[in-house]
Every structure is written in C-alpha cells, then in structure tokens.
Image 1 (cartoon, rainbow, N blue to C red):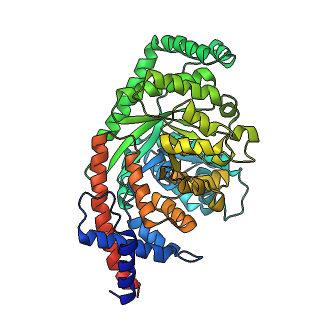
Image 2 (cartoon, rainbow, N blue to C red):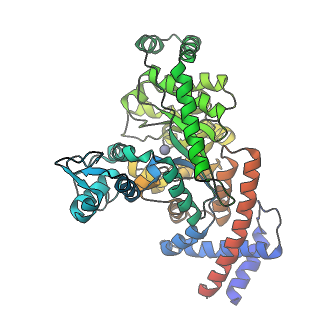
Image 3 (cartoon, rainbow, N blue to C red):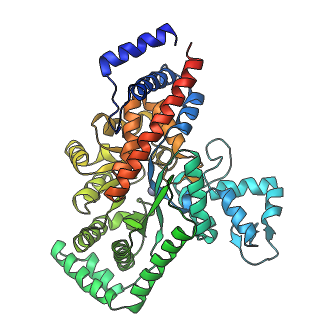
Length: 486
Ligand SMILES: [Zn+2]
C-alpha cells in the first residue's frame, strides 16, 4: 500500500470508524475494505468532473439490492421485442411502425426492417427514447413520446415467461438481487355512467364511501370479476414458476395497477380487482396507479382517485400501496395542480411509497409535508425518467431536498427499456451529480430491500445476501484501487 493511502485510511478510521452498519459479522478485513472502498469512491467523484468511466465500472460491479420502481413492459429493450416479433412470425408495418400479425402491402419482416437502417433507427426512436436528445428529428414532446412507446410494443410485451427471464438475466449481470415490477393490470373493467355522474357530484367522504360500498357489492355479484382475477393470478404464478424466477441469486415480486386516465367507474373497478388480486396471491405484493399524472382525467379526478385508495385500503388493510405522485413540474400543469398530489397520496390514499415526488418544492406546506414523508413513507427516485419526461435534473431535482432532510430514499429505473438505462446508470447519475458519501450510497442499496413489499423473512434473506455481496465487492475494489491509486 502506498504511504499516502495508508495515512488516509488511518485518518478515515480515526474520524469515522468503520460504518459497517448492516453487516452480520464485521471482520477487521471487511471493515478495512469498506473504508478503503469509500476512499476510492471519494477519489473518483472528487473535483468538478467526476470520473464517469470509473463510476460506470464501480456501479456496474456494486451490489444494488432491489429495483422498486420498475415497469415490466417499459423495462424490456426494443431489440428484444423485435426478436420476439420475429420468433412469432410477425411483421412490422412500415407506415405505422407497429407490429402486424398479418402480411400486407406495407409490412416487412423483422429481418427486412433491420436491413433498412433508416427505418430501423426510426422505429427505435418511436419505441423508446433513443436518440431523442442528441439527434435532430421530428418527434413528439418528450412526455408524449415516452407514454406513446407502450402502444408500439404492447402487442408483444405479454410474453411474460420470456420477459421475466430477460429481466432476471440482466439483473444478475449487474448485481441486482431483487425486482418489484409493475407487471400489468388485472384486466377487469366495469363501466357505469350512473355511478360516474353520482360520484363526481359527491357531497364528501361519507357519500363517496357509501357509493363505493354500493359499487363494490354490484361488482362482487359479477361472475366475470372473480374469473378475471383468478385468470390473472394463475397467469402470473405460472409464468413465475415455469421459468424459475426465484433462486439463490435473485427474486422477483409483482405489483398490479390501474390506469388513472379513465372514467371513475373504470378506474374504481380496475383498482378493486387489483386489491382483491394482491390480497389473494403471495407473489403480488402491492398496488400502483399508472399513466400520465398530467392527463386531463388524472388532474380532474385526482382527489377522487385518492379517496378510492382510502376506501380500498380500509377494506384491504394488508395490501401495500406505492403511488406515482408528484410526477409533475412547473409549466406542465397549472400551478394549483402542483400543490397537493404528494400530500393527498400520503394523507388520503395512505401510500407507503411515493414514486417520483418531484413536485415537492411546490406543494402546500412543503416543509411540514417533508417531515411527514420522512416519518411515514419512502421516495422512489428516478433520475433518467425525471430528466426525460419532466426536464427536471441536476440542481433542480428535489433529491437535493429529500437527501439533506434524511427522507428514506430508494434509487430506481422506472422504465429502463424505454429510457435505455439500467440501475447502475442511475447510481452513476446520483454519484456524479450529488457526490453522496459511500456510506449513503450503501444505505440506498439496503433501503431497496428494507422498504420493499417483501415478507420479513425474504427481506432478511436478501439483506444477508447483500452483506456477502458487499464484502466481496469491497475486497475487489480494494485490489483494483491499490493498482491505480498510486
Ligand atoms: Zn413509473
């Protein structure tokens, strides 16, 4: 060891000790490795231009625990979807760039598409965010481009067994041990125009709850309701077991969801089915709410939607809820709509985790809210997604508020296929932009298991695995840094 590095380590021990906060056994060696890894990490992030190449290597190797804000269909890369379309003998329509099961005058095979560089590149920009920022082309606004991608690959994304394996293999390669993915909605819908009118004209909580009581009794009487939930659960459980998703290296659990941009009766029936499904299956661990939060219906019915969650949480107290909330920023909606989304997700819907939470600085009583978020919930941070969809990044991102206020944070990918990122990259953005300590970075990795919706037993297993993985990682990093820090 070089004398300078040895001295730094002695100083680091003297002032900080060895944190090793999560280890079950802290040998002196592991402790030294942790301190030396922290010093190496400081070395590569210091200065005005952090060493991104070294950070890419560091975080690709580092165990990252789980990815808790993860959309199944948005996490698979376009190239994989095209492989599936090819295997299914499907075609690509050159006019719409959508998949077609029939050959027509305007379709080409996937292979023909790949040979036509211009068309292929065009498809990549529509099916994902690829080349959006660095390539001049006529394109929709970023949020519209993002949400529209799902309409292109939705047709093939239902190959769950293949998809779960793709996600598992990718996760193992980048040292991710757990994914909690929003896989799909249950698929039940009960439109009811009378209910829609009554509930939108409600006189308060009491009437909302009474109307929801009536509506859920009606839905309970529908044979299709039970059948749809049952088919949904069987489909997921079969896919999970058939490809042996869980093993000693990796686990996956599922959230289901409803879309927030529909009539009240459709939203409620979809949510009711989601809660019932999660209550029934151990593999389903939570309910979420998806779709653009700035959509016209999502904005108009926001409070009503939160009341739906309040009602369902009361009926199904064991069902976990994570909500996209505050995925908004100034200019995207009117200022008044930035005042209450996180607050109502927390106070009315009782969300245990907040997805994004970007509008925090604009919320009513933001400082009191921050204290409540810290006590009662966790914020799922998605840097790439926020930068693309909202244009919020760097010194404007509320990570700067959440982190300094010590709010529990997890680092997530959101839609790594559409965004063409991965969890390691999100950590690189974290480190290069905000320069947290290595101890903080480790805390976020452990948070991703601690605040998951896994059972306590499963959490314990994954925490132990994380301890071992960090011990191995730090020992490797010490060897590496000894070579290069001269
Ligand atoms: Zn999301």
